[in-house]
Amino acid sequence: MALRVECSNAETTAPHNVASIEDKSKITKESVRHMETSEEIHEPEAAQHGSSSIRESHSRSTIEPEAAQDGSSSSRESHSPSTTEPEYTTSDCGDVGDFYKPLLDVINLEALCLASIRARFRLDTVSLAGSAMLTCQIADIPMMGASHAVWMIEFSDGVKWIARVPGHSYRSFGDDEKQDMMGRIKVTKFIRKNTSIPMPDIFAWQLDKGNPVRVPYTLEEFIEGRLLSELWTDESWTTEEKRLRVLTQLARAMSGLTAFTFDQIGTLTMQDNGRPGEIKKMLCRDNDNLDDNEIWGEELYTMGPYSAMSDYLRECHEDPKPVETEEAKWTWALHQLERLAIDSIPDSIDKAGFALGHGDYNSHNILVNDDGDVTGIIDWNASVMPRAFGCARYPIWLTPDWDPVKYGWELEDVREFDSPSQLLKYRQIYAKAFAEAVTELNLPGDSHYATDDTKLSPLIEAIWYARDQDGVEGPWIILRLLHWAFDGKPPCTMKEYFDAWQVGQAGELTALIRDAFNKMWHAEPEDPAEYQVTYKQFLDAMRPQD
Image 1 (cartoon, rainbow, N blue to C red):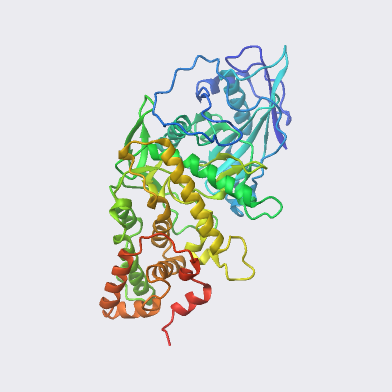
Image 2 (tube, one colour; image 1 turned 30 degrees about the horizontal axis):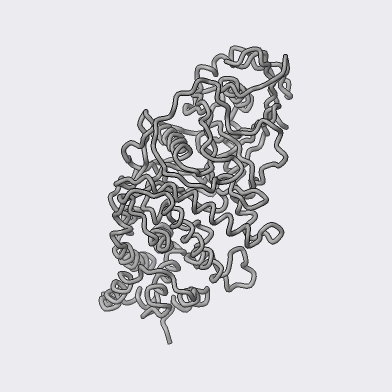
């Protein structure tokens, strides 16, 4: 059932005359007035780029305080009815519907409709003739992702918004989480204002669970488009021309973030004047040891800030306790190899200027139209990282071959990714487009961007994933790094190293690996087969060579 609320345009400062709700329940004017005092309303900004695709021209990015609004500006969304529906559904992020059931039981969708209507009137974006009613409709069931539920809100004048709600917020949402959510809102507005990156504007928000909707939320611009994750390998849509257009536009858009450099890794805060402030600790959620019916842990912890990527990686996971079990011994040996890889990161990447990036720069966060133009990059956070792990990194769907567990290209029934040669070609195209776009920006010398920030980003990504995924994926990724460092011919199998390490006889092998890791920071060879790791190779590597 779709909830429907109607309000007249008698006054533009607040919605009046609630006429009807399809389920026949009543909402009083008092509840509307109460909501007026509990909502943060943000007036829409002037567009920095067209809403249909990424702007192709580049100019020098600048940081300016946000201009005062007089209430007469209009929002970026179209006021004509949309002809296409969003193509993302609950299936995009797996079977997560059951995890969101407690949120669905708590949220007050009637109040959310009224909050949306009130925000429209307060922003003065409603244009109705005579006594016409403004209708708001919202579906009962949202689109569900890994961390948020998203409801589509449709108004009778053709405008569409979305309501975005943290999935775990039904049970707790403390001061740290409120501050983190507000920080993301401010950083989103900063990126929109100072780059050509297409991302949704945020019109209104509520951080306190005590509001009539009963959960914190943001009201955001709806961007037309389809998820690239559904299209990239879809033969009925994809063409080489569209793929190259997507990669080129993304590279040009993300390059704008190189204009803003910071001296630490962490969470960016914003000053009241709209300029970047200090770097603070990152707020993290402990999702280890979850029950089968959970995807979000309740415990929060902080990390950073850091002055080097290597410091961040070392703290991501503690070494296992010295327990005399076979599994613990293997994990200790694996961590030894991980530390060798972390120690090898060159200072030009490890400690050079840091920049904003997308926390999950993958195809499920990219919206495109039928022509292959990028219409939106969604689901941002406020993290500052090394450029090679932030704004200058390759899109994640171009580097699956660096995680052999997920790639499996040689298996006949696995064809969800491109071939190794295709991935290499697309990475080269993206790196070239990114470098050309940075050159056009004419940045000052202290921006320090180098093409290696992009070309070497798979190595940083692999080391991070190895440290983050100790279980099955960690050994695979370390093996991938060994193949890379030794040109496809590592000096030992993983099991041979583990066995030697456990009995204190791995010194010579460790020295060989340390030297090779220190020399592995170079561009990819033209033949990617030289350093690929197949499933069979992994199985062979886990047992001694004949």
